[in-house]
Image (tube, rainbow, N blue to C red):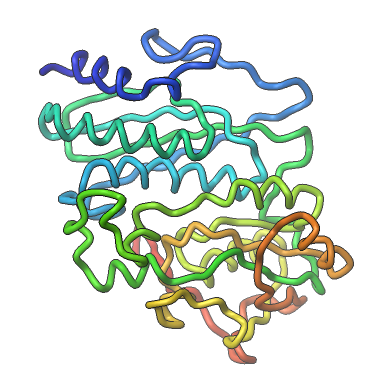
Length: 304
């Protein structure tokens, strides 16, 4: 099977998630429309085998994870999902692997209500590149740079389960979604917090998704905003099966970390945003945990 046959097969597997735009897969480029009064939010991620997912993992799970971790960036920006492009490098033209991978990305796209409008298949080391695009009303995108001293720091969900799954190993033992354990499910099938991101427009002063560890990602908000943060260990929502270090530094949670002005905190329940307050934004730079300075030891592509 050559690359064009692989592409045709994968597009067929995508079904409805490859339709519903002006022009979808099959041409030199996709054609989409930006809704009136909106701005386009775009992000791109490269997921490399044995760095961002186990190369021997089930392709359905790999495909699902690839879409959801990328869509999480739209959630962090308060963007409504629009469309996605996927480029796949495969060492060999493996029809069964590609078919199951396509089914996984289709299922995640349906879950996220996002359209897959195109992509590419080429020979090379196993790598998946996902470019996501969404829409946000003009000047309403959530950013990392608006946090102010006195704002409350929140996180959605619980943290550390995906890191616990990686530490436990065995991620290649699961062949379907039905077989996944709790921590492994959180790794392969994270839930992009899209509804929370939409609800936080006009409420959150700063936001980021937790991909590289809470402390490291919160530090990005602090640096961009020119502030610091004080956290309390007792308030950090540690997932079942995880420990505190995994919750603080493990990464792969894809929950949202965000800041909210004190006068708006009481609005969160009415907006349907389920989140836990873990600390406060302060003037002094850096992050303190229980009164002691800490630095994020989360994931970094290049050490040093």
